[in-house]
Length: 258
Image (cartoon, rainbow, N blue to C red; front, side):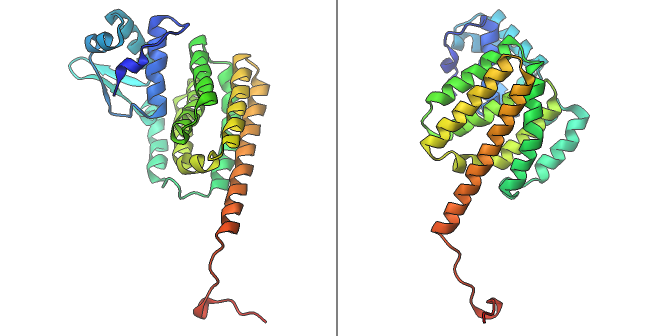
């Protein structure tokens, strides 16, 4: 990958900026569990920063559970299941057993409605200024992004970041499971420009509520966002059914009519 793409200005300190940018690559899935980061000296040269800044940024990511560092082996990206420890292993089994796309959308959204609003509320009490910078950057990029695939990545990263900022790795893992199930439907639900604008506006309201440390507003906005997605997805499903009706039954299984 092109590591030099991370060389940009930011209001945070250099180590904070680096940790935010590297974290984004993990949240979006550009850096996947098991991927190895370049050595500190090499990464510093590619990004144009000191090795000290790289070391501080990696220490921050390690403390947050995003990477694992061992002498002689290097720096490896870890999965949410690994962040959850022994309790995360049980959720990992659920993740492995779930077949992405096999669960009805209405059931997935039901889970989101139960899980995501309280997560947003919890995050308001635990986010740091560094975390808010990450959420703001994601929101701002979504507001200008035109590519459908890229928007879907940012959408997923935004919701994953909020759960990450509860600093409870089990909640982060649960959100990742939901994201896996939603990977296809996210692209379907966000096909129109109008839908993307509406979703971006909802993300902005959720971010502002979290930034204001308003737990009630964050929970309310997150719930409204999930509800609006479900309504739009059901409408899209109905339109598809109307445009492409199922062929009439034939043969012995055909229903009898009077």
